[in-house]
Image 1 (cartoon, rainbow, N blue to C red):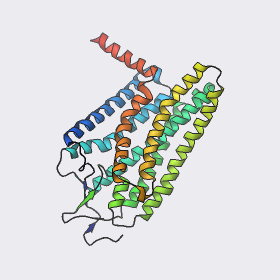
Image 2 (image 1 turned 120 degrees about the horizontal axis):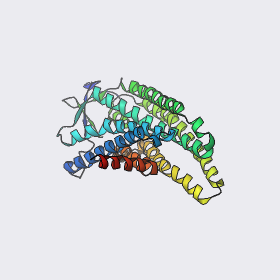
Image 3 (image 1 turned 180 degrees about the vertical axis):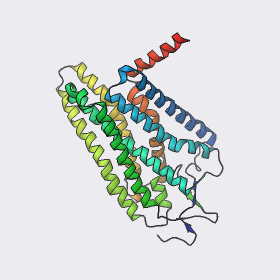
Length: 317
């Protein structure tokens, strides 16, 4: 698509994604403020418990602590801005800050998906090779896998930011470009661009698809082996215990990867802006909120550590 004479590399984006919401903005503000505060409190609590309690020093909890830090970052990239825009009559964001938000959102988001895949590997070793679990999934390997996830995520994000930098956007007389979303996400930016987006679409489909295919393959293969191992367990109690350690992870895998595939890997003609925004809210707000509860706060070791901490607080008072 050709650019109009008033097209600009540095417009001011007007985030109008929630302008058509039928719910009063005051109620949305309270809802998202509650979600954000609960996300921070839940994940900070989990990080502190894992760092403090000696029973929570296994590789699984080390990975959970890393995931909680990532979830707090993912939520913080989008929700505070959303809250400020809900009380503003003109929710704008400059192009430089928009691209910075896009960068950090992608960096945290992709790292999130990679760490969840690493956790599937952790569950595979714990169930299929429990005698060697402590030797294979040691702290050094987990740290390297987390670092590798961050490096891959940052390189992936730099590619997509680089492909966006040459784009131009057509604004109104005041230089404002309507962006039908609540943050600077990839698809809305491409829809609003007046430049050729074919290279971006190809990068999303091929490079982004490959990046998703690798972790998905690891998760599927891990759980195929886990399922076969569980079926061979002699006792029903052992099978229930093994399933309980994987059920929460599988729930979040389906939730997380389902929303990502829905938003980013459909053909453009099949994308609904409203549906994309709902899926993005689920991914950026609900998933970071649910992770500490679904993964860990239902875990008896974590609940025991929390009760122990609260008990100490009552004794100290």
